[in-house]
Length: 183
Image 1 (cartoon, helix red, strand yellow):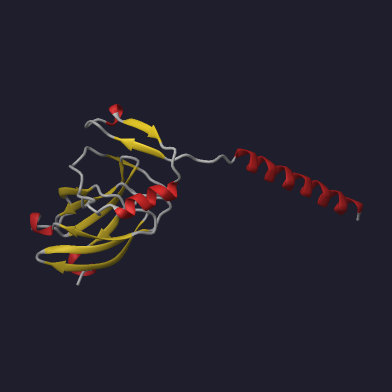
Image 2 (spheres, one colour):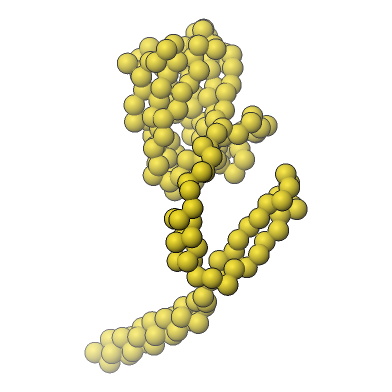
């Protein structure tokens, strides 16, 4: 009985001290306004604002919404890598549209993905082409992608790979066989 009381006392002391350490580590965050004056991120300037975040939101709400539509980034050189469970794609649907595939994918992993890479294979499972869409996919987010089958007429199979950390997750492919998996 004494051991249980002593154990409860020690645990309560540890809990109280952990809460105090957590409170001491919390500081008020100041918003940062980033202004990019050039094409290279190394030359970007930052400026600390004195206003509260609520005021910034109110100011932005009064301005006209003229945000540009996010477009695919240009093709970049990517190398293959082995990824963990944090990079996982799920297929929601797959439909033929105008000789291409319209596929709805979900990021079912634990990390945001940088993009998607498609690898096209012929009847003999020889790689005949590769395409990439470097638009981010947040955790739990679902997006519709168009796989350009019309560029590769001999396609028998398409491997869809997530991109994480600037590398293609070659072990996390989602296999799509157009004649079997898509309607």
